[in-house]
Length: 185
Ligand code: GAR
Image (cartoon, rainbow, N blue to C red; front, side):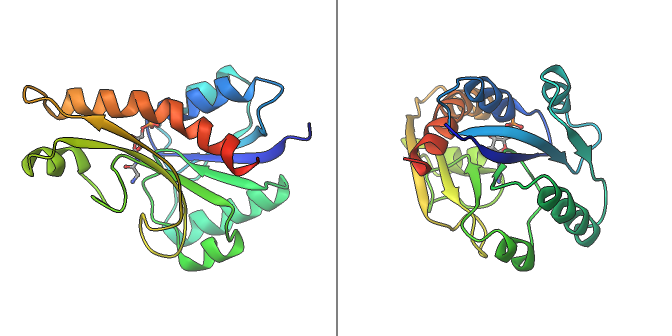
């Protein structure tokens, strides 16, 4: 199988990056990670790129400069898919248009509910019985594009933000790779 050349954008811990790397080592997984980009030199996830000898670039710049260099890097590496994995910058319409339908994101809620930040805090405040995570295509509106896969997680009374985050992230690590498989079926 010809694996799609992929770039992962991260800003922090990189647990989703780690999980996608693990899946991508399967010869039947549809993508190969050719590049990791981050806007944060302290992103812990950089260690996974190093560990698996994946080229990475730290682009700690303003939005405009970040995108200009990111675009150059991604085109230079002939990237066909961009996966946002805990990437905390909002990409411009212009950048998204360059990769129309080729950028996907994971979000820690059951979209379209709870777009934006602090999802766990808001979910608990509203006494929701369920939350979860969603993998979706990125379009020009925040956390808005076509949904590829969602996973629901039950919330128990005793649970706090930390516990919920852990439970949801465990599911994220499963569904991100399932969603990547799904888009290439
Ligand atoms: C993940 O929970 C992801 O859903 C969230 O950031 C976390 C990154 O974790 N993304 C967003 O909130 C995007 N709006 P990771 O760095 O360990 O993969």
